[in-house]
Amino acid sequence: MAATKEEIIAGLAEIVNEIAGIPTEDVAEDKSFTDDLDVDSLSMVEVVVAAEERFDVKIPDDDVKGLKTVGDATNYILEHQS
Picture (cartoon, rainbow, N blue to C red):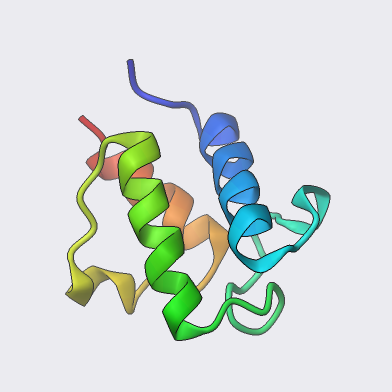
C-alpha cells in the first residue's frame, strides 16, 4: 500500500534523525536538507538509500540533485512509489 504524504514526512523525519541526529519534530516539509537539517552530501546518500528501502521507490542519482527540501523528497516519493 502506498504511503500518505504524512507517513512519508514522518518516515523521512525518522531517517534524518537516525542519520544526522536531528530531532524528528524539526523535520518539516519546508526544511532544506543541507541548510536547515545539516545533511551533507554523504549523509544525503544514506537518507536516499533508507528512503528507497522504506518506501519501495527507486531514486536515481540524477534525481537526488533535485531533492533540496523535505517537501521535494516527499512529493518525489508520492509520485514514484509502487
